[in-house]
Image: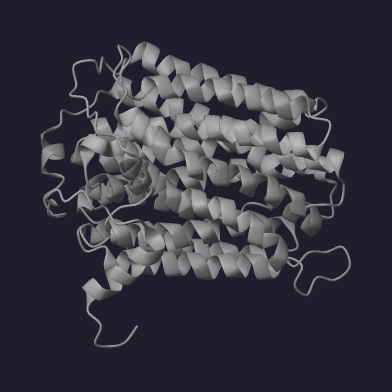
Length: 450
């Protein structure tokens, strides 16, 4: 970028790779005032937050246990020694959801039912998730494992997106950091507890997938049972859904919403680094500790339990302090620096104590980042009437890296690999660099929030 290029010009350049410009011609609200209506929203009750936390826990345990352990176990059973298949399976499933998510967001925004706009998608997502888990459990080959995970991925991601959009719909500004912290803690705790449960039933591969799916389904369903969303039948209906509108829903105008665009880019880069350093966690621990893959679940669960304290402290400190100090970007940068420290430690770790230190730092970093940046997203959302659509676009910043990083990581771990040992050092250092760049983008460019 040349020195005399204006910030507007830089944003326009980002548009070419980030999104399709919104050409509806509607007047664009000022990003410094788009959240004014949110300050008038009523505070949600403690009971509502509790069930929101429970639903977040459910979606996370159902999604993350297969990603962190179950799929690696299943692939080892069907194709031992082919670690790279895990990246292809998870990346392909993410691409499927990436294509579908904006359409799901538009469908959610326009759903008019007695249950509301988002609740039907909690139910739909849970059903698809369980079906996918069953397919993986009985699949005789890798192709069906990949198909099953694609179904499950779409399901659990749809349910998780519904929970995120409900928060965008309901939370006033003064509760966003706190509630994001509490739900973020749940998403940190759930995989650790889930992997412990999976390890306890690891003699049955079917149960490794089915038990977390059942737990997730129950908690997702209980949320609207105890805290109904309310009918959406009386909301105005936008019947002007055209092919052009569907296509444009995959992006947004970065010229009109620069803060949203820069945050999207920073989030994208940070999550790219994160997925470099988490996709192959099971195989990484197996190599560094010289353990069979089936026995790694105990190690992962132990490290995760120790990391829960750090993640909880990080999420709560980031959420509550950013609310109190009314500063978000500073905490995003702190998260990036913590992640760098953890990733470098992991990159050069060959003992359990070193791995624990690195994992604890990374879990704390992820918790702080997820909590605070989620609050930033709620503050700069371009149009709350289309929260589902824009939350789907936000999800791109996580879903695209989660699709591409597992596809690129197998190439990185083979660079300079010796014998059967993969080059995880290079992979983790690459993740550290990306996380740092992502944090810097948000710190320096997202000027609409402090």
